[in-house]
Amino acid sequence: MEKLTKLMIRHGLHPKDAETGITSQWLMQTFATLIQRRQHLDGISETDWIEALQQTAERMVFHHRDIPGKETLVDPRKDDLPLIQIDPYVRGIVRWLNMMHIYTVNSCDGEGRRPARIDFLNDLSATQASIIRACTPKSVHVKLEKRRATFFYKKGQIADLLTIAERLNNVWRNPESLKVYRLEKLKQRLMPLLRIQGESGREHVIRQWLHRYLRSRADWLKTDEYGNLLAAIHCGEGPVIALSAHMDTVKSFHPYRTVIENGTTLKSSSGILGADDRAGIAVILEIIDFIRHSRFQGTLKIAFTVQEEIGCLGSRHIDPAFLQDIDAAIVVDRRGTRDIVTSYAGIVPFCPDEYGRIFETAGALAGMPDWKITAGGLSDAKTFAEFGIPSVNLSVGYEHEHTELETLDCKATLETVLLLETVFENNMIAKKLVATCKG
Image 1 (tube, helix red, strand yellow):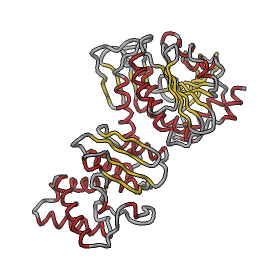
Image 2 (cartoon, helix red, strand yellow):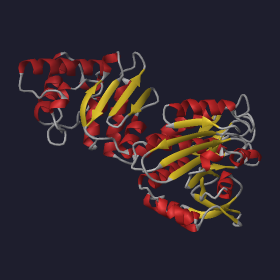
Image 3 (cartoon, one colour):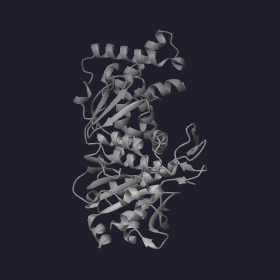
Image 4 (spheres, helix red, strand yellow):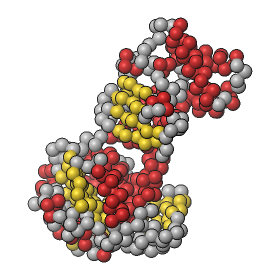
């Protein structure tokens, strides 16, 4: 009966006789219909299961006028969802979202002709948006707005929506599984970045790719005269914080290389991997998708710089107007795990200790108390500090950069994302504290 249990979950139904009321009656009549057809429950196809559910639902709704109407007539905080009335390919998504207190008010599966959509009772929080995004498989694109999720699936592949329901159920039963799905999505984000050439001085292809990505997400976007890609996202009144990673790699990628996965670790079959600093770029793209749904109050500025590997030339020549109002900077370009670099070799400080300790505190809040302040090497953080901007450089999980032994621990990359989400969600970089650091 394992297959039947899976089918029930994918369609928003509790296995093991956990349903009550009209949903229980509907389920029992569906089982009876299948038994009459001599269809074995442990070997039923998903197509036959959907057909039986829908036929039984139509028959029950026709004969029982007192069956609850569409979702719009029900407050999911107080009353049971009218699962029998919800479109079959989003029924499971709706059910498990509501079980996680992500309350819905309306939905449509698009009937294979249009995108599916789900409307919400309240604005999605950053955590809720992360759950939906992580549980959406690669074959489906999800667009998240304040109170709507739109799912774009390929023609003939509406059944891919059922995978979302299955994953949401897993997260509801075991919240730790969310990290597994988030790690999978992060790898999916990294792989295209690791295919785009961009050695120092030849960053135009990666810059064009990032420009296309940012075009619909940033409030302001430009390429400065030196080639740095700059952007801003406004999220209310508060400090202006820069997030930065460099676009260039120390060498070009080997033309015939493949990226090899071993658990959470990536490496190149030949030549450099390029995680320095494509991993940093991936972290920033994750934060860009996160920030609109977060409680962050302020402006997030993005700086994707050029020619970092040959002396931080891009950051040294960055448009001065872009830097003018920045209160603090976060560079994501440090090897290893859980380092908060606040100085160059312990000699040239990037920021006062108070600024670095923000990230130690955030690590503890996120369940990673071993994020620690340390000294480091040359990076764009040193350049931003020279412009008078308190700066840190955060570990992003790569090792043995600039060599054929380079690796990337994607789990560590995700931990950097989680650290930054904690910083922004809790507005930990307060304008008053930043003013003290700059003073």
